[in-house]
Structures are given as C-alpha cells and as structure tokens.
Image (cartoon, rainbow, N blue to C red; front, side):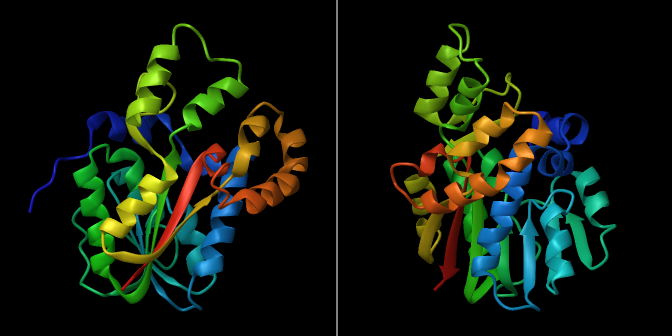
Length: 265
C-alpha cells in the first residue's frame, strides 16, 4: 500500500527551520509541555520494561527518558535528520517511516505513541489510518497515546503576544472554522483539533477507554511573554493549574496541546 509522501514544506520546516529539542528544553512553555506530557504518560504507562513504538518521535526527546527508565523503544519518523539524531541515543532503534504504514508486526507493542503525526495529517482519512495502524501494532489491552493541537492554540498564542490584527483575523477565522492552520504563519501545515473530535477519532479506530487531557493548561501563553528566568519561577503554579483543569470541558481547549489515551479492546 502506498501513501502520499510527507509534504515537502513540512519536511523543510523540521529539517531546516525548527528545533524541537530546543523548544522543549529552552523555553518555559516548552518545559511546561514536556513536564506535563511526561506526567500524563507516567500516569498510564505499564511498569518497565515495556516495548514502546514512538511514531513521529522526532529526535528522541521522549524516547531518551523512556529508555532511561527501562523501556525499549522503536522510533519512527519521516524526517531523516531526526532519525539520525534519535539513533544515537543508546537503546533507541530508529528508522525513517510513515505513521500510516508502520513496519511492525500486529500486537507487538505494549504502548504506541503518536505525539506529533496527527498535527500534520490534515485529511481525516489519513489520521484515521495512522490511528488504526497504531491500534494494530499495540497488543490487546495495550495503550495508544495521541497528541493533538487545540483548535484555539494559534489564536490564544497571538492574542497573548498582542498580534491579533485586522490583517490576520480572516486567516484566524478560517483556522477556527476548518482546523486547517495557515502555513504562512510561524508554524507549518497542520490540523488543529477540538477535544471531542480527537476522542471520536480514537474511538473510530477501535480503541476503548478513551480519555482526552489538556497538557499545558491555560497558563502557557502567559509564560511566552516572560523572560525565561521569570517564567521558570511560575512553572510549578502552571503545572498545578493544568492538572486541576486537565479534563474540565469548559477549559480543556485553552490548553495548546491535548493528549488522548485509548486501549486496544
């Protein structure tokens, strides 16, 4: 089975213009996202050693700590430079590949992570295929975790920076209506979810016990406006606020990212 290749604009963005490791370690918002993602994953993960397939695992920012705590990790990513970096991490097996056609046997993993692919699969059938592939590879009772970007993330970020204008308001309106992010802004081609939509996509892939959590909570845009040394002092408060509101239906969409958890039934 063949699938469309990765959009060249996305490949260019991650190869030449964007450093995921730097974002998650050197900005307060990134640190908040990283810490909360780990916190949520640890809440659901099986006891080590478990076999983890990290789909869209980039340079191994999550794979690194997963192997450090005793799990085995197979990482797959469409960006060759990412795979080269991840492959240098002891204990991580990394290869170039596509979330829609995973090179792993049925029921061969305890956990399958998709902490990025759904962002850039802008067509519903492609996202459905990626989720079905994850469910195929996870064993019965195994865990599938998928990340998504909130439909409101772009607007809230720009509003916090004072950058919502007459010029970009039409583009923002289209993004809110369609979920399709305008790649002419600071990010690349992407699809932004509503939380209930994400839950429905996991359920449609045959996963059960589906729950969606807000990752960063509503404090992330405020951290973007502060110098790093000041923002670091607020991380503890931001994490507690995110935890309090992580499933609140009135507030979950104020979190820039979601994590959805489901199990193979």
